[in-house]
Image 1: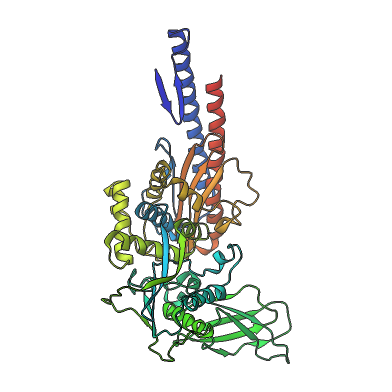
Image 2: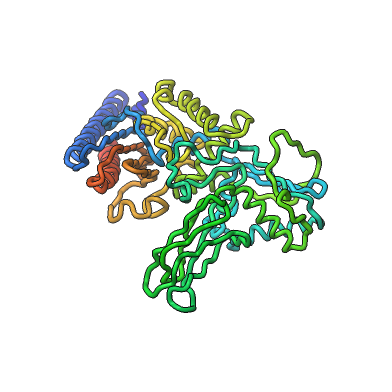
Amino acid sequence: MQVVREGFRLIGRAAGGRSAGRAALGAVVTMLAATAASGQELASELRRLMQSTKVGQSKIGVSVVDTSTGEILFASRADVPMIPASNMKILTSAAALWTLGPEYVFRTELRDIGGRLVLVGSGDPALADPELLNQTEPKLTVEDVLNLLAESVSKAGVGEVSELVLDDRVFDRNYVHPTWPTNQLDKWYCAEVSGINFHTNLLAFYPRPSKGSAKAAPMIRVQPEVPWIDIENRAKSVNGERNTVSVLRTQDPFRFRFTGEVAVPSAVPIEVAITEPTELFGRLIVDRLRKAGVSVPDSASTVRLVRPEEEFVGGRTIAVVTTPLSDVLKRCNTDSYNLYAECLIKTIGHSATNMPGSWENGGKVMLMLLSEKLGPGYAASTRVADGSGMSRDNAVSPETLTRWLTTISRDRTIADAFVSSLAKPGEGTLKRRFLGAKLKCDIRAKSGYINQVRSLSGYVTNRDTGERIAVSFIANDIPGDVHGNVFDLAEDVFRAVDSHLARRAAKQGTAVGG
């Protein structure tokens, strides 16, 4: 006799024949009874938490599923499609792994074609991302990247460049999703999405008080260095311990307005998402080329976007920048960086259709994968508007997320890459989550937040047995006065699952071992 249950294998063919078989069967029955009792305890605990926490009129959906057996351990409004916020990235990142493969690498090329430079983008969101540059050995800065690109041209023997063409055709040119909040488009989390991205399509401003008289305009350093931008400096230098300064974007893509007060040098930048980031990158390259001694015409047409049907024949590649998909996934899920998720959904669309990647074709690929992996009903109940969850037009049920997480966990080709991309307590968006919790298992999860929405979905995994449970918590329509309660409830659900899994493993170990 062979019985397989939740990773335990009991073979009743020991010496003693029939009586040994009965003993083994008895152990199985004991183990299953302990598991069932433990599951009932978890459901009771979660119901108690849901009923005792003051959440007002919040709509909350919870799904808890054993990834080994597919057993539903708890469900409350689990099948109701809800706005997922950044939990949308769970769908996007796994879809990218299935579509592109874990070994995929983003590749940006700078090519010389008879004195014309062509920068060919791949939709890489990581090019000159300061966070990733800070992790290189030796550490690089954005200025280092620009100078290395310019020097590669000079060292290749190109002394004169007629123009720089920016080939961004891997994506469409719809840079901003139509359902993103218009009053937040200058924020880092709403940065434009292009086939050629640079410095996460932001400018970073570092103000410091003037050394002159009080009330004098503060000094402002910009990263990357953009000599031609215009800063309308209405801010003042003051005595004090904190800054109250802000930067406003104007209709002119290279004009910014400073207001407020600056008391101390800013160590943390004020980041502003910019319009026309691809063109800015091109102009920065040309500026650094001139500084490297390469002759470039001083004309407004020197830097341009590629024409839709333009073809380039021959030439040579003189510089390549690559980023592995694993780095992009980590930044997408652990740090919840929206630009990364949006580049992933468009890359999915491009890879599947060989057309410029878009929110539309990328979203269709994601729905096709949902139908293939989970079934048509799950795809039919899901709406994919963007890849990051910034749009309120996205809709996904907690059950869809736990079934998706279960399918990922069972797929050896992508499971490790996906799980390692999720944050654990103490890092990324979970840096301040589960503080003081004495967790017995490993938690890997994706948090999510937009106005009146909170979500937290991922895995709880037993460190010893490898048993894993998928959990999804989504709350919508949260009143302001209970926001903190909902935040805590999401963590309490994960804590309860953590305790359950630890207890279950202990009981099963006792049942099997006698």
